[in-house]
Length: 80
Image (cartoon, rainbow, N blue to C red):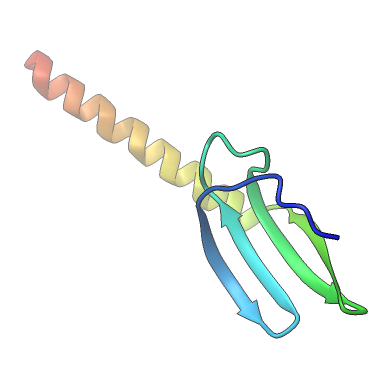
């Protein structure tokens, strides 16, 4: 028996016959983050994938760049 207990938007990262990796992107979902579905004996197993160190560094750099861009825009609006 299967039950669907969440819905929302996701990005498909990787897919092959026995493995699907996806990123749940909608904020109000019960699940958030990167997940992997793997087949095992005709059943599916869901794993939450943790970010690798280089993915965390890239995410931090992106966030820092966004902060800097916002500060520049604020400075321009204020005439600095």
